[in-house]
Image (cartoon, rainbow, N blue to C red; front, side, top):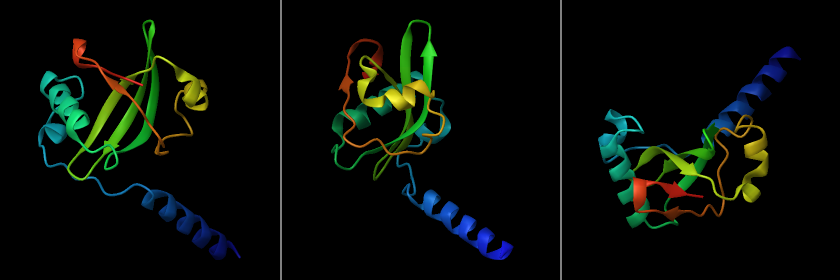
Amino acid sequence: MRIAHLFVLHLLMALLLACQAPCVNQMSIFDEATFDDPEYQKALQEVLLHADKHQLRFYVRDYLFLEDKEFLVVKVHGPEVCAIAHFLVKDPRGIVGVRNHLGKGYNGAELKDFSFLLLDDEQRVVV
């Protein structure tokens, strides 16, 4: 009986991990630099600006309160990109659960119908 429970547990864990597609970068900056590096930011903005939005997938990583701003930390998956993005949150109504739990329990959850605006100043993106 115990072996059956362990098998089911392993099977469920494998299915959960299989939900996210493998992520491979065509741009080495995303593997070599950190998110706060200006070159990383520039490359990420280019990807978000020029990628077909239907090819990009967004997965919850974290939710941060920094000073008087809120950020949704997201893993961006695409055919040629696997990067971490920090989105400035202006209106948290669509992600109240994520916000209230600081992203915990939502790690790896895909954001469906995720929309954002690219801002020219400070190279930031806004949810």
